[in-house]
Amino acid sequence: MREILGRRRKVSLQRKGRTALLNAVLTYAEQWKWRVVPGVGYDRRGNWRAGDEQTCACPRPNCPVPGAHPLDPGLLAATHDPRMVRWWWTSRPEAPVVLATGDQVSAASVPAAAGELALAAIEKLGVRLGPVIATPTRYVFLVAPYSLAELGELLDSQDWVPTSLRYHGDGGYVPLPAVVGAGTGQPRWVREPVAGPDESSPWLPGIASLVDALVRAGRTAPDGDRLTY
Image (cartoon, rainbow, N blue to C red; front, top):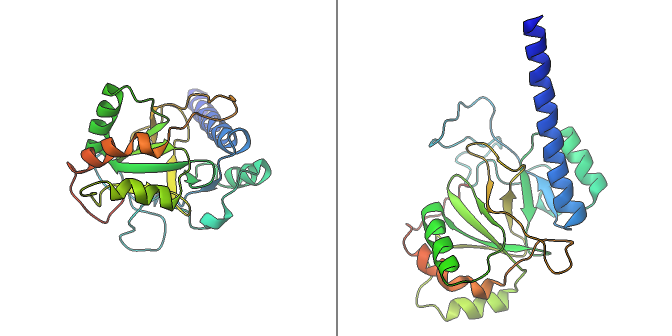
């Protein structure tokens, strides 16, 4: 009987976790109008430990963004339609959440060490931050949507922009935390979303208010082409 009860408890916790994930995704899509799509996830056959790289479930060798990118469906299918979102995460209840940027929300990201420096610098300046996400290797700063022209002007004023600094605008994507208090290796909120003026979606700063700190912090991180979220 003890073994059966233990199994029931495990199943109950799994269901609770799946419900929390679905509720989180529905909040992103239905309430905040953020376009989302399931991520490909990780290869379940791999034995992952903190500090190791997880193996992407996609067929691409040495995937540059393991686990944290769309595959089937692709990014163009991203939506905030609650019916589609519910179907996706009912069919794949453990799928990572991928945010399609450029519509309601955009982002900029730096390697984790640089992200901590940028976060401290921005807060010291008294600049109001929006949501900030930590992944195992990067910090993602969510911002209001920006145009390529606006971004170009901001970067043109910089002496040098490190390639480790990434901008996620129209046609881009970043991972979102599935639940509060996500486990090791999962995206988590460093700064949780706070309601904006209309209280229907989170407040987002403009990219102009963060770009200087991100560029300066990004210079401390080695350049590279492997995003590894």
